[in-house]
Structure formats: structure tokens, C-alpha cells
Length: 391
Image (cartoon, rainbow, N blue to C red; front, side, top):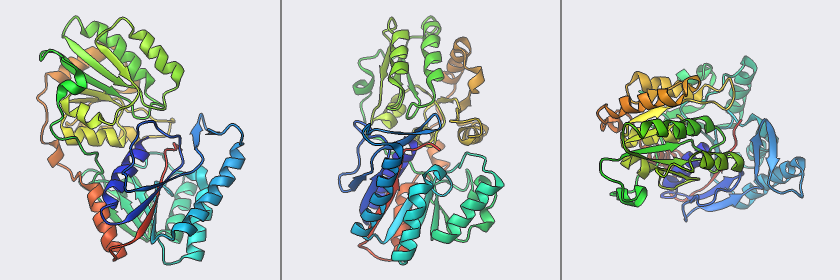
């Protein structure tokens, strides 16, 4: 989910300069909006769940879908003939997608050597790569890629801190600044929260796509019963479009007698909710963190990884906490009464309104401007590789 949101914000800026083709290959998300100027190309959905590939089409096997996707990528490239291909996260991740990505970049280098290949990469790679994996990343970058766009502010995190073999990357490396979602100007609070009393504390709770983070939502619901005795509050919970139905139903059952808790799946207005909330409780994925920085909301974050070695959220959280931007609760410390104490403590802090000025939050716009100059032409076709897989 995070990769898709970030890529979409970049695409939103690219369309000012280019004809953009956006290739998505994960499950479709109801209500998610792609900029209307973009030509969307959907591959048959394929995603990882519990370490195994899953497909939507029950009439086709995983292997059949993989072959269809591989062929489609090359046929779409031949149809579009783009001046530039942007891969999202690959080759720093997506290694389980080598079956389709390696043939694509190999074909481009052979059939269309003038096409530039660019990697779009978030601030923290996350997974602790083995020496063999790092060697593979360097080899792929140097063999196929012309440019690396690192979506971070160098004052927060440099590429050299995120990848130990940074000196072995031969292509140009650009720190674009952070990619953030825009907030709807002057969005009225009552449209989001209803006719809440001004003294009622507005608490926003979100877990990104929802494949992880269930334990945070469960703890929040339990904590609300304790918190109600201390302060009046309303809670908006967004489970994410990928939370299993059984877990989402279980959460609603837990909160069935708590009228102040409203549980929804997904919203396009998450930045606006964050802007109008008194406090945000969330994981610390890239996009949520950017929303915290751009809105200045008081925030408690719980860094949860997809697997034991995935340190992405933890690295980002520790940096944010050291800067005094967020409060941090380790996943193992999630407990209702402890969460109540942390919420009250956080609410007693002055809201930090100047965090957005500490870092460059214009990464999407700067990415588009840099690519415009890099390609040195005003009318080009860019094929953007957008995925929602989790390696």
C-alpha cells in the first residue's frame, strides 16, 4: 500500500511534464484514485501472503499468471516505446519478482538502449541484506540503471546510511526530498469527525494497508474503555484495505458497545484526518511518517515489521523520536493501560507545528523537475512501475 501511495504522488507531479503510463500489479483497491491524466495499465494481480504468491484469478495458477505478466510487460513496453522506465524499489527489493523484472530490463537494454532506466527508492531499505544480496543489487544497478532517485532529505537520512555498498553504485544518486501527500486546504473538521464537542479529543488510528498492525487496533479499542473515564474522546480507526475480513469483523465486535469508536476500511482523506486530529496513533511506514511531518500532529508510533529482519519502521522511528517528533511504543509494550498513559502524556505536549520546515517535503515535485532536466526534452513518455507487493 505504501509503495502504491508514494508512486502515485510522484506520478501526480510527473504528469505536469510527461505522458505517464502507470503499471500496477497488486490487488485493486476500491476508491483509490489515480490521476486522470495517467494511462493505467493493470497486470493480473499477484501478491505475497505468508511468504507465498497469491492470485485473484482462480482459473489460473500462479505460474500461469507469472508468465502472462512477464509477456505483458514487454508487449506494453513495445507498444508505448517510452523514453524512460521507472522501477519502484527494484533492485533494492522485489527480488521475488525477478521472473518478470529481469527479462524486462534485459529486453530494454537490448531492444531500446536509449531508454533510460531509473530506480525510485524510499528512505529506508529496511531488510538487512546479506553480502550476496548486496552484490546482486550493485550488479543490477550497474548493469541496467542510469539513475537512482532516493526519496529522502539528506539531513534526515542519506543513501550512504541506508545501503552499505553505496560507493559501488556507479549511477548518479539524487536525494529528492520526501514524497508527501497533499492535504485538502481548509477541510472542515465536522465533515470528518461529525458534530463532536470541542472538548472531545479526536484520536486517529491507522495501520497503512492493514496486513500488519492488528495488535495496535485491538489495544486501542481496549484502551478506550479506560481512557473514557479520564477524558471524552472520539476514535476513528482505519483498518486498511488489506486487513483480512475476519480480523476486521473481530475488531468491530470488540467495539460494538463503544459508540465513540468508528471503524472504517480506507479513506482518501487520511492527511486531512491527521491535520484535524488531536493525536495520531499509527505504524511508522513512509507515507504515515510524511503525513506526521507535514501536518505537525502529535503522534505515537509503533514500528512493526513484516518479518523479523525488516527494520524499516524501527530505523525511521528511532530517528524521529531522537528529533522529538514522535513518541514511540515498542510492539512488545502494547498494553491498554500503558497506552492510555502515553496518550495522555502526548496530549499534554504542545503541538509541533514547525516540523514541516525541518525537512524537504517536496520530493514528488523535485523528482519530476529533475527527470524533466535529466531527459532533456519536454514531450516524453514515461512508464512507471508501481506495485503493492511486500518482499
